[in-house]
View 1: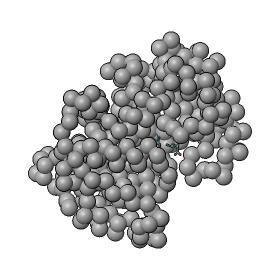
View 2: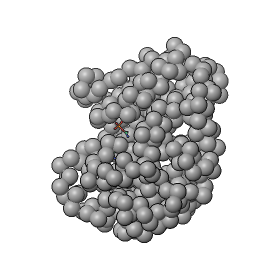
View 3: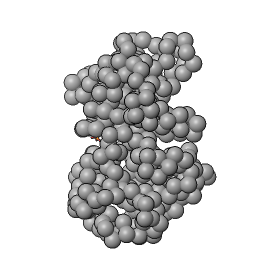
Length: 310
Ligand code: CP
Ligand code: NVA
């Protein structure tokens, strides 16, 4: 199946700021029940996973179903992609059967190739470089707690300069909010993404988590060893000593600060049990919002009638 002018969502800047706000507004309407249409009736989303997942898999599958469509879980262990069939062939074959692809994998360029060769929308469900759907859910959670206009918010990122940090930079680039990043030397985010964000937003980089959280309204962290980095876990635990988000760090944040974590979390490493279970934590609202924001993304990319402008 093909669409005339397909759009992808591989990175937050793939949408304009206006489109991102519209998507966030639709996610709020989906969450409240105000929007209950089924624009994916008769449509299928293929979901390719070469890494583990709880939230991404379940929220995309349930979300597609709730919009009237069908989701197909394709583990790389089972499909020919895992045995070396080229991405570009997989893209062209799947484009003949389904109406959209969501993919979670390692190399971001594989997702770009999938999108280039596929004639249907492709959604990035996490790569080593980016995790845009997660940051959209985080932005929805911020709007629920701190107000609808994202420009004035101060966000602190404590930890690895990983896929989450890179997508926060992309969000700052599009929305223009202040982002403070605290990471140790050797664990920097992507240099190009950082420089691009600097042109549009106030980006503060430090190796001191206390400086990053001072007066911040969103305190955000993630595991120190991402999927695929398991063998570096001990070395990383040493490098990130002093980067645990604990009550003392949270005390320095704004009085209205919320704590976010994409999950899964390692309690006692990047965050204490007291913080993640504490009154400022919004991690389960954040996880729930994956469902609503991804439904909004699916509506935008796959919910058009054939011939509608994308
Ligand atoms: N946050 C997130 O993407 O979770 P999963 O790895 O469970 O999908
Ligand atoms: N940075 C983490 C996020 C998991 C949702 C990883 O890539 O494993």
